[in-house]
Amino acid sequence: MKSYIYLASPYTAYTDEGKWDKDLVERRCDLVFGCYVNLIAAGLIVYCPIVSTSKADKMLGRFTPEFWYEFDKPFLQYASMLFVLKLPGWEESKGVTGEIAICKKRNIPIVFLENAQ
Image 1 (cartoon, helix red, strand yellow):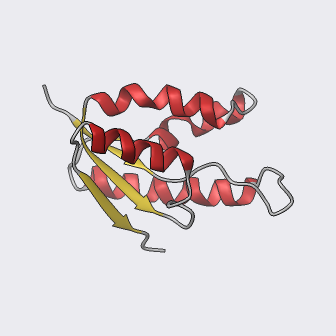
Image 2 (cartoon, one colour):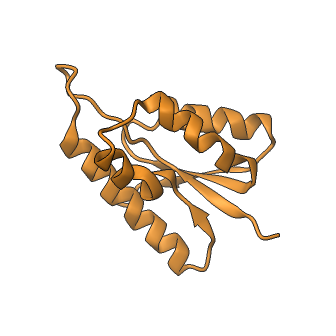
């Protein structure tokens, strides 16, 4: 069975005033989508939770970040590698740090990708 690379990046963003930062979220989505396209164009098999679920998140009224953390965990089980796109905020992202911790526990190799933009 072929496995896949799990592409992680930060998603959730709030302004300094604590409000949902739609502009930053959309920018993050655009950047991770660009990375995803480049990886699949290179012939890699990639699952990216942001690419797969961000539109559903908007359509369904935005579930909590905790909902998506749990939703994405099973996808890490069969991943052969974790790629982390180092967008600003990746080190503070609860989602990304959680994905890294799961992969370390399961001995899944982790590759950190620099943000090209």
